[in-house]
Every structure is written in structure tokens, then in C-alpha cells.
Image 1 (spheres, rainbow, N blue to C red):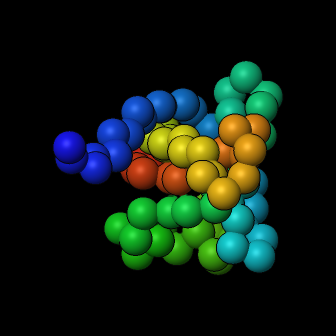
Image 2: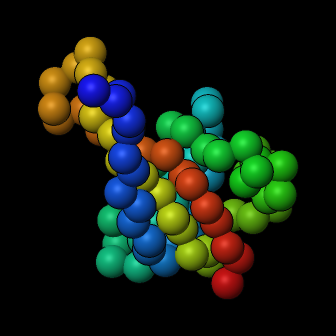
Length: 86
């Protein structure tokens, strides 16, 4: 019928740790590390995460998860959908 992709968004509090080779790492409040492969373009413009300016700052993170259709179900891609500096 229609090929519509629905996104389930998740929200967490985390600390920006680093940008390396196109990946953005955050440490969540529970101690988990999440690495984002994709970032919404508005976030890139507003926060310039490729610089060291926001390292160790706390954010409210909104993100989505998707499975890579060419890999196994264990391969998840995380996309940073929204970011708010706390």
C-alpha cells in the first residue's frame, strides 16, 4: 500500500563526549555510551559538534533507531533528531 517509515523517538539526558570520524558520542545518565552515525542538519548548524566547544556539556537528546536492512537485525543505526543544551 504506502511505504511510510515511522520513527519511534526516544529521549535521554547525556553528556557530549566527542566527535570522531563522523560519529558523535554521548554518555547517558545511566552510564551507557551511545554513538550517533547520523545527525539532523539543524543540529549540525546550531551546535557545531565537530568542534570541541560542547565537550562535557549536558544535553537532552532525542534520537531514533533504525535497523540496517542490509545487515542483521543486530546492526542498529542511531540518528540524533533533536538536541537541547541543559
